[in-house]
Length: 92
Image 1: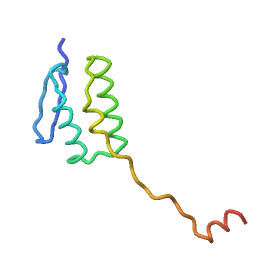
Image 2: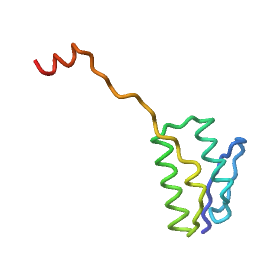
Image 3: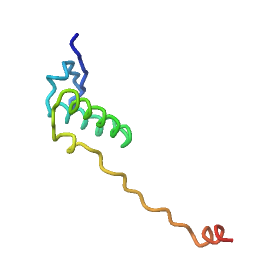
Image 4: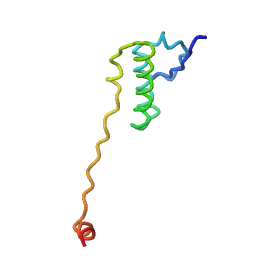
């Protein structure tokens, strides 16, 4: 039984093919589509890339560099700064 996967790259077209026939550019287009068009969260993106990376590296023995290129940037958030009143409330 042949395995089939569905990819939706940046152009929005759907490619249905065997995983052995998928190349790095298609994987990159798939992740860029999900990041830019679907606007996946960092968590969803990380889970997806980890699963696909595991499948291609461990099952199909493909060592691709594309997985390092499409990783989502880390969220940059400012630290929480307490007001003087909030600090006094903690200690008193």
